[in-house]
Length: 418
Image 1 (tube, rainbow, N blue to C red):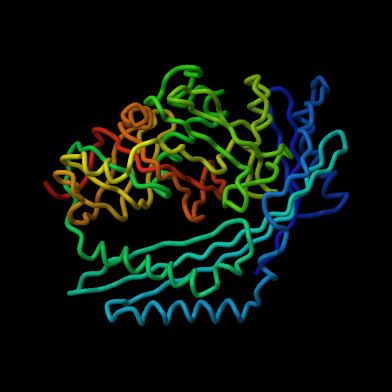
Image 2: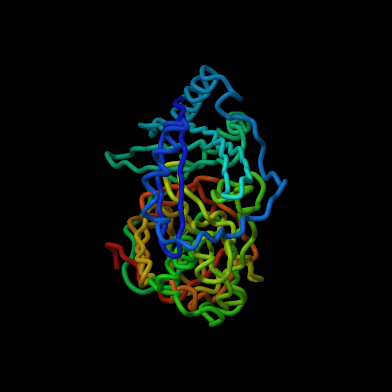
């Protein structure tokens, strides 16, 4: 493994921000960095923003996952995973298993001289299986992870279940028919399908976009933006979850922030800078990829609370639609909220029954309309298994998403069928 260390120095003066970083942890390195920031502090008032409150809360252990299991042991288990997957069927033609562990030691020094620290472990096991039949190939992927050492990911019960799931998804897609195109009602499954909520809605509720009035939700605080019963939170305090942080990268303790309550917009996610300028304060969402990046408002664990509907009834009450239970990539425009998402596992719904699997389905719509067209919410809310990474302005941070099964009316489906 590789080791990287360095520091970032940030200066804020009104709406202006200066940032300098270096991997030279010396007095001279600090002097050089501070010298480059003098232009930002010139003509400044010299008033210090109030430092974040302190916390003794720890949401995860501080054992380094890089040292918890030997390198040879990890390699041997990956070989076992490969053999197990190939033994499932002669249809298996390719297996990919990826085990990633990391450990961050973070120190934040405030202008008042207060030092706060956090140790952040992370482990993730991802498995992809490709099957072939009749000259046709399809893939299935799944994974699991969180802020813990890799030990429990490496026990047979865990990785075998992941291999079985990846193999199942690949076979589903092998039998899938071309997705029908048109406008249809869509049932989104629980857990990972919350990535659509994260991308199409969550980013639009980050403070910087709203302060600059570039979000589809700008100026709507206190207004109804979603169907009744829809409540969405961003909660960085969930123990061991991939998106959790004891403190954010500005030293502010994480918290549970209600963004939408019973359909009403009630909050944004804020870092210190945007929270100060908008008069709300930080919500503990100031995050950055590394010492070489400046903090900005970012999501942690973002999810929709459960409703009261039986998930089976949501499907059985639908005459014609799509059941999307797995998602791949997507694109979102923050200003308009418009999105395009691809499904990696989906099924046709006809006369209240889930029918054949479909492939190459894309969901096309916009976040504001989706929120208002939620017609049912299941009682089966779950979080994703710990596989999410979110990109914004070239920075990548680990996140978690979640939701119950939900019924969305009138989404545009892109596909090659009729």
